[in-house]
Image 1: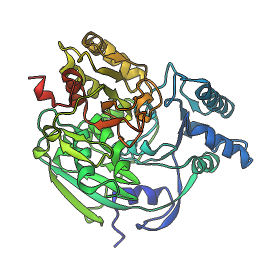
Image 2 (image 1 turned 45 degrees about the vertical axis):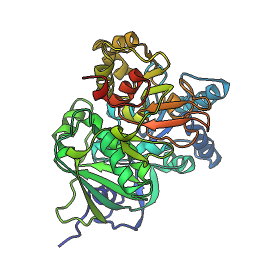
Image 3 (image 1 turned 180 degrees about the vertical axis):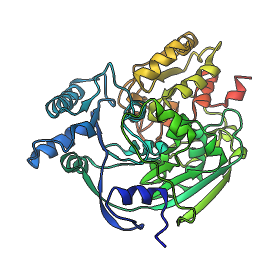
Length: 422
C-alpha cells in the first residue's frame, strides 16, 4: 500500500518527480508560473542579470504586474516600472500595462494564468491567494524568484498541513474575510508557521470563489507557507471560461495525515474587526466600542473583487459618507472596474461621496491613494494593520470586511452594517 498524502503533498510530489513527499523533506520543485511586481521585480531582474543568464526558462511562465505604485506615483516608481517593462519586452514575458493591469492576485486568476494543481511562486507574500483554485502557491524573496525565472525550479521544504473545518451557515454580512480573521485571531500570527492551511467543511463548500480568494490570501498572516482549497464545482465553473491549457485536479487521500485538525461553528461568527496593530487582534464588530475613523478603504488583493464591491454598494446605496470621512474604493482589476460600472456600482459609490481609484495596491502598503497622517484612523478591507502600514507610524488601521468598512464610512465610527443598513 502506497503512502497517503495531503493535497499539498500530492501537488509537490507530482512537481518534484516523486511518488510521495513528507513534511520536512527538502525537494526541488518545477514551477508553472513565476510572478513579480513593480517593487520586487527590479531586484529579481538585477540578480537574474548578475548571474549571467540570458533568457528566462519559459517566457509564457514569467509574469510581471505593475500594481503597487502604479500609475507611477513618482520618479522612483516610474524607473522601477520602466525596468520591469523593458525586461518583459526583451524576454517576451507577460507584462500588464496600466490599461490592462490590476492588482496581481486579482488579475492572475481572472486571466486564467493559474489553474488547479499548479505550483506558483511569486515575489509577493500574498501569492498564496491562488490556493483558492487548488494550486500550491507561495511567496518567495526576489533572489529566489530570479533563480526560478532562470531555471524553472525552486528549492523548498515540504510543509506540514493543518486542516480547518467550518460548519454551519454564515450569518448575514459575514464573509470569507470574517472566517479568516476569526481563524487568525484564534491561532495567532504564527499559528500556522511554515505550514499549509487546508480549508474544508460545508461552510467552505458554500463559499463563493471571491470569498475563497480572500481566505487563501490571508493565510500568510498566520505565518503559513500556503493555503489551499479542494477543487469542486464552484472552482471548475470559475475556470471553465478561463482555462486554455490542460491541468490536473488533485485530491487528498481520505486518511491523509494532518498535523492538526481545527473545527469551527461558522454560524456563530459575526463580522470581525482586527484592531491595531495585528491581524490576530480580532474582536466581533459589536465589541469594538466607540472608535471614530478618518478614512475607509474598500479594495486590495484581499477584498477588491466584484462581490466585495457589490456588498459595499449594498450598504452605501442611498446613503452618504460621513462628512469627516474619506472613503476610497479601489476595484481589483480593470475587469472588476468595468463590471462594477456596468452594474451601476461606481455610480452608487460616487453618489455616496466616495472616490473610486484605478486598480492599484495603493494605500494598502502606504504607497499612495490614501496614505494616513499621524493620529488618523482607517477601517480597511486590506490584509495587514501593522504599525505604519498605511502611512504614519502614529496612525491606526482596523481590518474588516467590505460591509463593515462601508457602514463605518457612513457612521463616521466603526459599526456593523446592521447599524446603518436595516
